Amino acid sequence: MKVYCTKNYEEMSRKASNLIFAQIISKPDSVLGLATGSSPLGIYDNLIKYYKNGDLDFSALKTANLDEYCGLEKSSPQSYAYFMYEKLFKHINIQTDNTNIPDGTNQNTESECLRYDQTIYNLGGIDLQLLGIGHNGHIGFNEPSESFTHGTHCVKLAEKTINANKRFFDSIDDVPKSAYTMGIHTIMNAQKIVLIASGSEKADIMYEMIAGDITPKVPASILQLHKDVSIVADEAALEKVLKMGDNLPFWCEISLQFL
Ligand code: F6R
Image: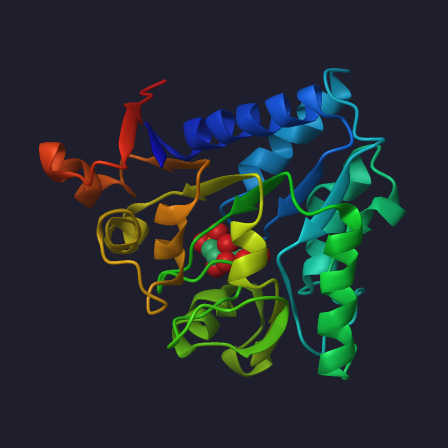
């Protein structure tokens, strides 16, 4: 596990964008696993800039998003389909057919989960998965639980998650209570993983993820077992990790990038 510590959100976004840039340059038809939320916004802005400057071509790129709220139409401004279109897809030359997101309107949970797993399988799996992390350690919408999940499933959102996401809705009652999410097994099957985090409110969970026990109660802790994971986080998010100094687990290689 490589941990890159950056000064702030902007530098976190730059460093993580560079990793994605390298992936697309080396394999233009890569399958990128994408996340929504506040953390990746700076990265998406950078990718748009690379495209506009003529440095990146997205025409062969394929994407698979981590998750989608159940019950929201694609046209709903709070849906992740809408988020991806507004924040990234409409600004670059990606082919719509090459973008994939769980269908939150499919009420047949079993068929939607099978369909999405089959989609990822048909893509040949994920080359690089971008992840944010929830305050409770969720990745995608894999909430803390008693066991690690396998494929796509419908999850009841934790109270902490509903509270954290209410900022995107008019009121807390409007936040959907369930979502489709890629499973932990699918995420762990990605060839490379880049997890980003910014801000002191993520400091406790970053510490638990990197230096704590591997447990489904902190779903992101499973990343300690992945062969190629880069954590790109700012000083505030890594405050508690950095305090450990030489006592960090041996698998955690910290590369300080005070850019
Ligand atoms: C979003 C997702 C979530 C977020 C996490 C952090 O697609 O999968 O796991 O990455 O909730 O959200 P932010 O970045 O808003 O702090």
